[in-house]
Amino acid sequence: MRFNLPQLVLTVLLLVGCAHEQQVAEYPAPYRRPLNSPGGKFSGLPPAVQNTIRAETGAADIEDIVKDTSSGQLVYKVYFENRKLFPTLYVAPDGSVLNPDMTVATGAAQDTIGILSGGTVSGLKPGDLPPNTMKAIQERAPHTEIASIYKEMWGDREVYLISFKDPKHYPDLYIAADGTILKERH
Image 1 (tube, rainbow, N blue to C red):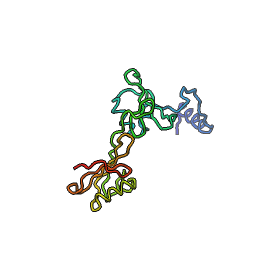
Image 2 (cartoon, one colour):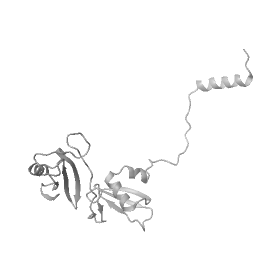
Image 3 (cartoon, one colour):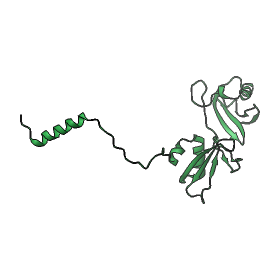
Image 4 (cartoon, one colour):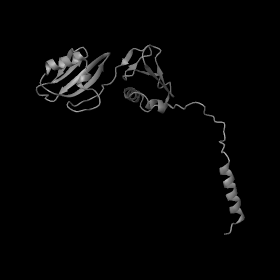
């Protein structure tokens, strides 16, 4: 068996290197904090807030998003790189656009949480409705199945749009959380 000198030296160095404890070199790193990008913060927002930001500003470059509770309510403050064109946007968790004094400037868009009765579908189910709303449905349409339920915000008021599987005999209902029937759609 023949060894040439470079192979022998390499083999010895390799064996010596494996016998010693390896030390990890420490290099000074300029990054000392977790990195939070505006895109990362945006993706962590509730879908309703994301939709409002897109609807109001399109693809405007976001500088920062701050989750603020100093007013006693949760508000997302969105700061844009071009502040002259896009001033700070205040958004409630339901997607409503707020004025700087935290009053509602524009109500949230309709929640499209649909369900089909008889199946397990994530979202709003008849059992999730406020008791007075469910009572109003049972009084108006006791012998039919619910086809879908949509929740809308009318100002500060929750309103449920109820559609039935037999729309010819049971028209859609708009019912407030307190059970008040606001309108029927034929």
